Length: 171
Image 1: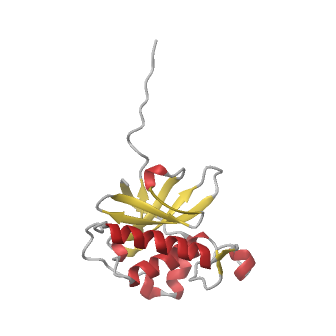
Image 2: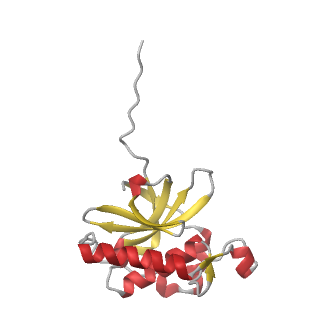
């Protein structure tokens, strides 16, 4: 993923940080990508599928009576709640938060969505509540907008469009 400059923090994350400042004030010193081993890959698959199975999808409006409310889910949640839980479980298993980045994307229908980007030495992979498959970010059908910075959990950076788009003309 090619990162641009600083970006605005999503309002849901901002309010989450006000409620849980310890979550958003972590400065990561070691920002090297995660070494992706076979066992680590299996663990990513397991956590993604497990959280997707345990948490049932409901909107923030249905759960909290608010349009946007980021929280750790217990039974129900929306996309960013799944992301928070996967991030916490993977971090508790020893993966640095520098490699577990909340990411905001746009789905093909234009709707906003949140996924978890896992930075590895073999590329950036996406954990998503809409599928149990873990895919390289370039293999998804999303437009990537922004994600957390690798060195600071309270900062967000833009994601630049892929530069491999070829444009040509003929006469």
